[in-house]
Amino acid sequence: MASRLFSRHWVVLLALLSIALFFTGCYPSHPQSVFDPKGPVSDNQLTLFYVIFWAAVAVFIVVIGVFGLTLFKFRARSGHSDRPVQVHGNRTLEIAWTVAPALLLAAIAVMTIRSIFELNEPPSDHPMQIDVMAHQWWWEIGYPEFNITTANEIVVPVNTDVSFKLDSNDVIHSFWVPKLAGKQDIIPNKTNNTWFRADEAGVYQGQCAEFCGIAHALMRFHVKAVSQEEFDRWVTSQQGPPATRTGNGALGQQVFLTKGCIVCHSISGPDTDDLRQGRTEAFMAGKAEWTEGEPNQTHGPNLTHFASRSNLAGGILENTEENLRSWLTDPEKMKPGNRMSRLGMAFNHPDASNKLTAEDIDLLVEYLLPPPELGAPEDQDGGSIAKRSPEVILNEVGCGSCHTLDEVDGMNGTIGPELTGLGARAGTRESALTAEEYIRESIEMPGAYVVDGFSNLMPSLRDSMTNDELDVLVEYLRNLE
Image (cartoon, rainbow, N blue to C red):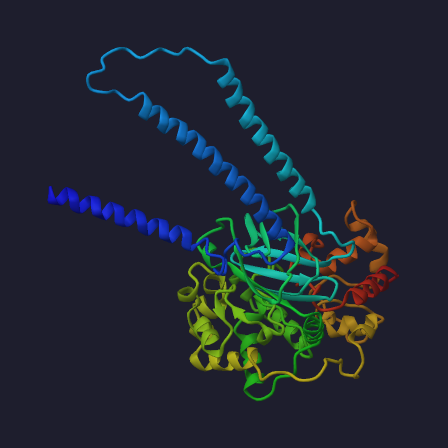
């Protein structure tokens, strides 16, 4: 008897604990609670949820109430052995319990469809555009209007409609920022769209909401809503190259090159030529075998201006020297299943000399987290980077290390196809593309078409020039005879 009573008490205790935990997740102040909307999308969705929820509560009360009343009224009583009256139908009741739910469902359907259409597109005609590429298990964030690429952190101005183009690099993911918008699936080979607007400044947590593999629970990101003035300053800082590294920072850059980090991570800046040459040398030395799939595929985040980000490791750690050092020491311990520990030459190369030492890690930390940079970014001539000529662009992004072009000094590489006369050939490469479309595709997605007789070694150059520069370069190459 005591054992049975003890078990009953435990059942009650566990039930109460489960209820408490359930309602803890609904508490508005929780970082991932949907009950504290901070934008019109989440507010609209919460309003619809409340309508459906309270309608369901009303139905539950009526159904369970009638059911309980029936059980009580027609319960078997001692001393009453007579067979109760048998009811074989009640047309009025049957019509009522058919029509009432149908009307309720119709009303919910109307409100749901109205919300779907209202939230399908942002109300403003020209929302800010952000491209999101989901990877296992991190987020690539692109601002095409500003030619900025970052990772795991979305910076937006408050009270601004932001439209997102969502794509997947591998499997199905789902984009979800509970306080700003409901989840939107991201499906390979299919572009989906969503939008939100942050009404208040602050940092909002986001995450992948579709199971996507071993590190799914650790695939997070943050949305930072800031004032328009602060956003403009952020854009200016991100568009410019980081300061040239000196001392231990310069030594850290060499570690970044020689230990294969450059194979998976992109870096833009005043040393872009050296970095891209390092990538080429890494491939030529056979280190490309330590990447999975095609060498030009993006395996890791763009690390330009990494020091300006508030988090690392796919949004799970605060971006501090201590956390970065721990991450570089043992990424598998910090985030099980991550690709860096599995594919990075610095972690699994059979030659111990290629692996990171404690000294290497200290130098990398100095390289990736330099002192705060001051001043607005400018090119080496003190002018806007957007003023570069096509010839300068070709040299500064390192095209000459792989390609030959007779009319540009320094372009005498033999690893890639010759560019002399490209304009006459470009229109015949792919039947579905014009010459201009083919050249643009070759710059942005070089792995989409590989010329016979050449290896697929070229990295995407979409982060190495502005949109205006890209247009100028495409036009220049199209007219090469």
